[in-house]
Image 1: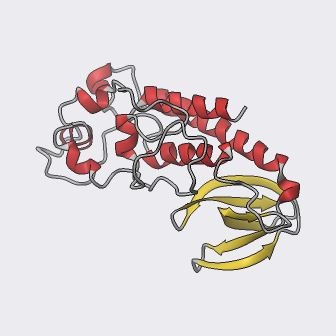
Image 2: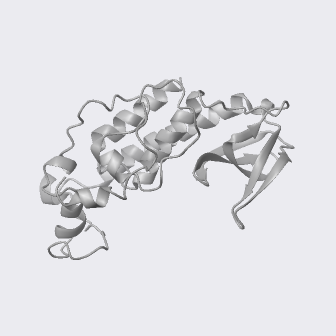
Length: 235
């Protein structure tokens, strides 16, 4: 990785090594919002064997990986800038003038939208069991225990709250509730989504790719493999 090893000391999911084929991760922890290192190296996603090498040219054949594309090729000199803004025509430096980042990003965005829809369908299938949540208020970062869910869930968005995988739930009456996944409870006060539920691992993968921020550009092959495997796991 050359100089990029310095970048990855911070730009990683920061939750230790996961077991890619674990049937129960045993936690609702989310991948930290700086998961570029994991993605570029092809590590730490569920449903995809990350014990094998993913030969990603952006990691291994560019000289210094992150700093090559985001610093030296960005015209900022010999690694003296930390703006990290890559030029619009960066891909053409290696792939030719007709190759653009959108060719990768559009496919990634499509797969992410399919995954959101699939997770949403899984939630709607059990929405009658959702009775209470420990609601989070994003305006003041406070939690309220035992908030009743007074209408069926209409849609969920995958996000993170205080280090945990979470949902923004829009109800059929227009109410919006934010809750960590483990705090979405049934009538007996038990989690509707146990840690072994594939939705938990699918949400981890979704956030891993989303938090990478490149929409697949950092590691196109691995990104596509992760999203397709996650969609298949939710069938």
